[in-house]
Image (tube, rainbow, N blue to C red; front, side, top):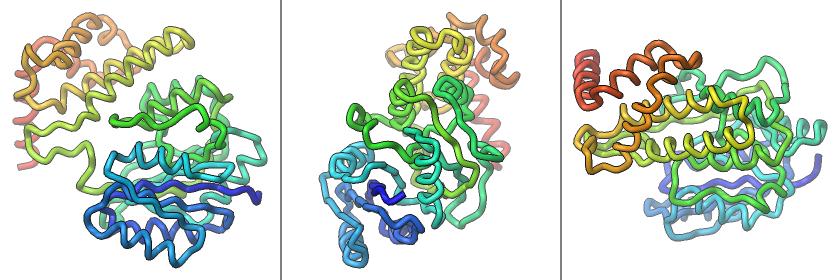
Amino acid sequence: MDEKISVVIPVYNSIDCLERCVRSICAQTYQALEILLIDDGSTDGTGALCERLAREDERILVRHKENGGASSARNLGIGLASGAYLGFVDSDDYIEPDMYALMMHAMCERKEDIVQISRDEVDEQGRRLPDVCIPPEQICFCSAEDFLRELLLHRGDCSFCTKLVRRELFERHRFPEGLLNEDFRLLVDMLQEVRGITILPGQCYHVVCRQESTTRRKTKDSFSRVFIDIVDNADRMQALVDRTYPELHVYAIRFNLYQRLDYLLHVPIVQMTKDNVFYTKVKRYLRRHVQDTVRNPYLTGKNKVYLLLLTVAPRTVRRVHAFLRRSVSG
């Protein structure tokens, strides 16, 4: 219980929330910490704040780099880390004082490679939002295959911020750079090398949902590439399942259909054209899997209706969908 945990925090223009985040880590009852603040080219004074925080606690190490995205900042932190275990916290978020003590106790007691704590989500005013992932009532072990099934059903937590990971796993892996949905991709790769994940019940990690989310639109025609990356990751999952976990096939098909539904409900209508190769491939997939859409037991009735309508007349459905949303909000 005295082995060091390296906590990596990618930081970019976080001057209004970073101090709360860092202080929640410094206040951990588990004291054997190394806190790595990786300033990813901030332009708002966050870099200077990092340096001030480091002067207040000798466990804090600061590195400044050119802007390259959260994955590149995390990867730099992994390379610098000296701890036997790695954790990650986003600069928007904060954690309970006993989070790493609870995770480390489970890690040592159960001799696992990955331990996960449960999380909740709050808005910028601190108001509790509905749980995205339902925490277990008591500590439990989820095998790699079962965890993959939960991810395919959108019930699993793929975030590395809620996990403590044995350092050796990062000797072969890094976060993919230049992509979004990167936690999902890396976790799927790691799950193929471990027995599974021990999951703790306490909601000790607090996700703060900010307006500047990577998936939020700035204008009606802007579009986050996360909706492209989730489809690409669904295809990678399908290939993995067909190769290694054939009993999860029906779940993987459901996942593929759902991710494409998410894409089609967010891609701007002006981009829904024949010369958009990715959009055309998404449509083609839906047309080839009409029977899967109808028969899949893990899609809701609403999912199936939207998928079938989008298969037949995607642009029309999107226009109607947009009109109905405006009517409700108005």
